[in-house]
Length: 121
Image 1 (cartoon, helix red, strand yellow):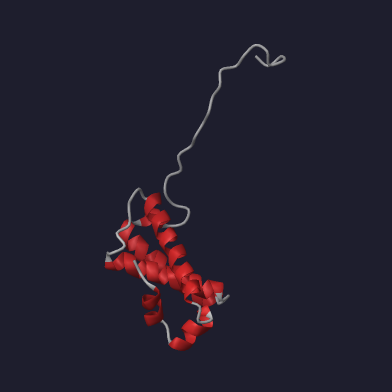
Image 2 (spheres, rainbow, N blue to C red; image 1 turned 180 degrees about the vertical axis):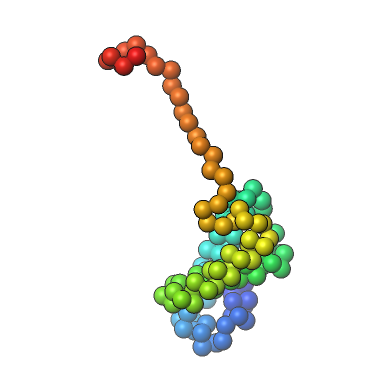
């Protein structure tokens, strides 16, 4: 798993201060959201992430950076980080991680009709 120090290492001290207002809890929350996002992408593909794998770490780091830039309302920079994270995950688990891909399983429930449906038999 990545840490706040990993995020700090990716940013200049000025950018870290600007993105987090020097509040490490903001960076920690970005990491937590990134972890959840990675887990969800793997689950969509029927897999479990190995957060010790260097590619998974890098994808998580890029997603955490996305969360920070998005929180600071720097959408253009955030978009780049999001795309980087998605590309890394696609390399790891394939195209099922892409938005809108994967198979959707239809669910249906059927109940036996009864004769007391007021004319609907």
